[in-house]
Image 1: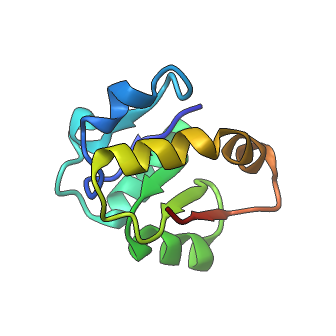
Image 2: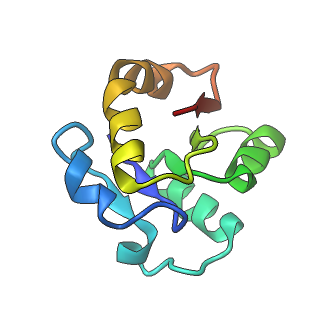
Length: 111
């Protein structure tokens, strides 16, 4: 599963989830740090990623533009990296089902 993590999530999260999400990366590792949400959106679309974010901007793009890319919004996850990790781990099956469902554009997860 290709999950690029938006800059509002810690870079330290990537190595902590690669056992479940092996193609994950952080926008910083793709030279997209401080890039606009639209630029990140277009990059994810071009490379088959689903965007993981902790803010509403990508959610709003998904609602207005549709998929691809899909968006996983960790709503209200302004917590430590461990909380985001636990959320992504505990919701693995739900995320996997979401990613293959052609009808769904956004998955909202709350800690």
